[in-house]
Length: 586
Image 1 (cartoon, rainbow, N blue to C red):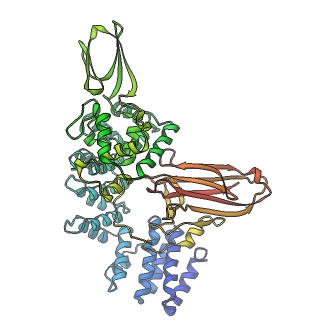
Image 2 (image 1 turned 90 degrees about the vertical axis):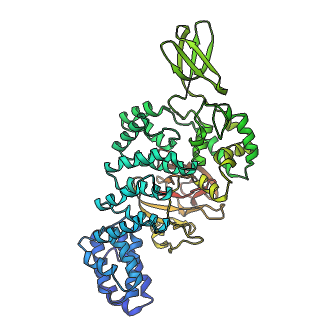
């Protein structure tokens, strides 16, 4: 009703709400959220005018402003007219809640005075890091030159890792070629971090940001080619995106600078998923992992004082998180860095030699093979020199028994030489490059879920999902799709989130389609269930294409009454959020 006739209902509410407190307070809160949900600037103007009318009632006003703040979570929408005077009144109000919500709105709506105050707080090194990160999360939504200039001093190697990563992601949102130089500096400086996880967080965040815009990507690849930024540990998702870019110049430059890339086969992807589950099950024996490492990996890799220089030094390469190392170990041919391709040399006397080329001169070719063995072949004895376009690293590690594989992987990820494998350290390695935010609330989320809004996302389907870290929630946009519903499975790790619908399947309307996506750092399984029987499954990961489609032909059920369920199941309990763009039956 409010969305259909907002002028009438806001007028009525401004007269009635003060008389019926406290019962009217939740209604005012929800009404302001509904006005935001319409995504119309004119309705935000009505919302501000409504707040002006109830300004004499502090608690009611605070509820209204809180509703407006929550309504901005699905995307900032500003009033159609200048409301700076009203914002100043709220920001200097005697009521603490009104001041807090007024300050937040002022920043989100780009009020210059409020933004400058927030930037001063951002630069205040006496403030706790979590508070400064929270400030960044607000400022990254404000696309103004003032914010961009205020962000630059944070993008330095002296900034703590968590705050620097938050600043990098804010820069990626804000855009502007002025950010290229500081982002390249941070990518280069990531190697100075004390631990592999900190290195990985900073390096991956900088590389991911630099790959979001064409000019930034070109500058990044140029810097890598010039040796200013290391290609070691280059994130697999970014390499894949570059290899499949629509811009041929980017694809060619990435191949030249970063080396060959090819996508994993479905069988290899399945093996990676299986071994991930093995790594997540049970506790690793790091001593046994070290023994396996010494007998296998050390014949090619240096690691904590031992090994050979055939492959990259593992101290700073590919160990930022579990997903990264699984891809590198199980499918080493997915990304082959320049200089680490396996070459074969056929000699004129009938020999065949293999290794990576470490010297190629007019007089000889020098190969370095497994175990550090070198072969020097005079140029006049070389019959053929062939790039196999394969990695020197063998493919067989995925065939290790699950227990041995788990021990090996966790030893490489977290060797005792780098300190104990604590629960916090293990969680970080499992989650990977997680966006730092203020501490998430324990137990139920810190705000009430708007179940009415969730249920109206697709009214024909009944939603079953837990109140889990601020989900379920509707998002204004996710990777190009509008009006997306975000959910998570239940915390018992067994019960999926789901949609359910009972209906009669009409002839000619038998194609059920669900368009879904995964979190940047996780995956999940979509199961379609008809009358209690699973009829189709789909693993939903964050690889391209980002949005996956599940199509089901229900022709055999035409004319029947059926119960349909679409279930979102967890895979390993790591960032199992499911994103739903649409569910249709046509």
